[in-house]
Image 1 (cartoon, rainbow, N blue to C red):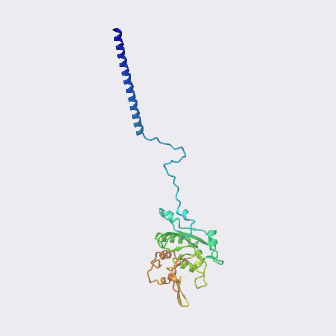
Image 2: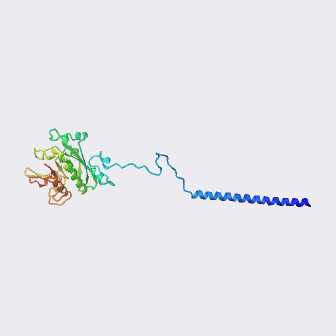
Image 3: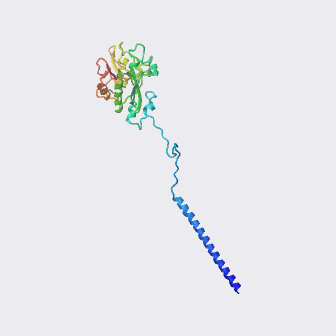
Length: 286
């Protein structure tokens, strides 16, 4: 009997110990699982690690930008009449488009036999190239270019800058060499120009254009009117309707015109005030 009781007690004790061990294992497993879930939540809530780029390396999140060229740098090699995009440009950059420079070898070569001929009283160093912006009939901004007497270049630059700011319209402005030095072809194309070695039309006297001291502005709408054999002649011929200055039309130069006022203030003489001829396009300085 004692043996049986001992075995029963021993068996019961083993069962109790086994249950305790199982409960402890389950609790430990639960704790591990709980810790794992808590760890995942903590990891999810933690901020992303910051990646530090090596020294000298550019950040992949910052775009690399290049400096925008100035108007001058963008258009300095472009020919006259080129349309210029001034969007987003400041006053300083626009003003830099008005400048004077010496005649380059390429331009001097192009002038030969066109606007410049043997016997011209002006030397290369007496003349300058004036580059500007002008506001066209098309209401766009264009590059203008003319050769002018170096003594008048800076003040002419100032005059054209003021005209530009007022959006005073000029049809075209390129060196008369583009027309082979032919004044008739230039004014027929309504081209604003300055230097051209030639005589006064119908005369043996040198024109002030030969000295780079005369500028013709919008010549088609402001023609040259003079008498030939007692009859009035209009140059260019197709501009005859603009010779009647009593009529109203665009681009007409008068005493109330802003262009006239600027040149007059700078000491220029206007051909529209002459008596024997009327040169409405013409401003000259002695």
